[in-house]
Image (cartoon, rainbow, N blue to C red; front, side, top):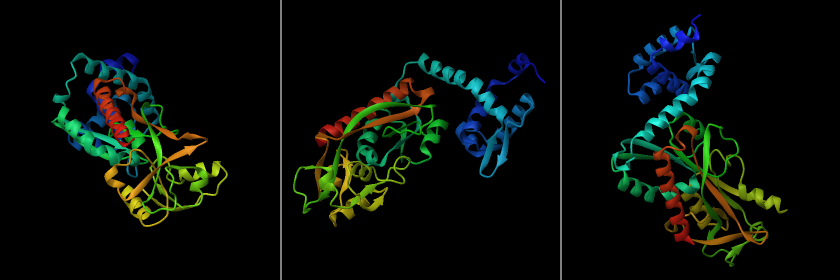
Amino acid sequence: MKTSATLFQKLDLNLLRTFRVLLQERNARKTAERLFVTQPAISQALQKLRFHFEDELFVKVQGGLEPTPFALQIEEKIGSYFDGLETSLEQLSDFTPSELEGTIKIALAPIVLSCLAGSLFSELRKQAPSLNLELTSWTQQTPEQLRSGDVFIGIHYDLDSISKEIARDKLADMEARVYVRQGHPLKNQIITPHDAAQYEIASLISPGWNDHFSFAAQILEQHGYEAKVGFRSEVVLAIIDVVAATDMLLPHSNLLPRHHSQQLRSLKVELNGQIYTKGLFAYIHNKNRHSPKAKWLEGILRNKLLQHINNQN
């Protein structure tokens, strides 16, 4: 068995970087893609790590690799030091967005995706012309993708079941809206639970948040009314088509773009005498939270959200 001094002094630290990406991806091919090397090079690095630590570190399972208890113990000991080193090195040089290259992946909840895509792309193209933007809808896999680094930042509601490795920062408050067709029997500018209980709900699914329930239906039930959910979809335009042809209600927010809702009317939502609001949060790995790149990107996301909200009010 190697001593603690031998474990450090005779170890190529580049192997630890490979080890950490392997731990995040649990897949040799994906690790090779992230590190821009060949898959045989990853296999060779893993063999060296196994010899050095005298442990299998990763075992083959269906779909990839599973870390051994000792591999998890290594990560627990070294993870924070590597993250701190990465942040410190980033802060040594001035941050210049125009010099950014490669691809940045951002995951947005469906309620945000339809309003932010165009303006976000335009702003990033202006400030960082060599940076490619990949926008994706938030899914059940997004928290793990944030943890592994595949997704740099995401936007969603205040989520309960999220890893402690992922930090959250509030970006903005949006106002709840209910959208109905132009000739809908509801004629007021404000809707209450009593008004809404008479009609079916067309519910927008936000993966990872309300996969198996309707938030609007829950609110109605909390106020003593029986909720009727008539249609559910992850696709906003599909719900708009259904609502435009029926008396169903579309619970949404003041983030819904006007060009999507021209055939609908917007009603403010009043609960207990107040207009209902809900917060939106940015999610990012703790190791990136204070980096200049993260602060720059979070600032753009916040500004674009607030601009859209102010334009809709």
